Amino acid sequence: VFDAIMTFKKEEAAKLIEKLD
Image (tube, rainbow, N blue to C red):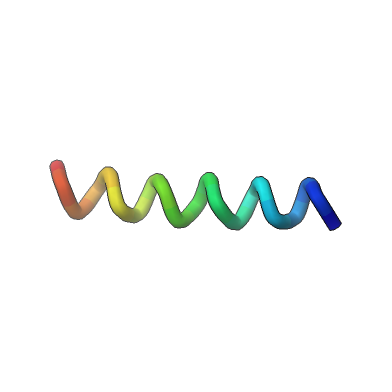
């Protein structure tokens, strides 16, 4: 479960970075 949460957060962070860039 923990790994799934970390993966989800990483994907969300990537999306935010793309929006900023």
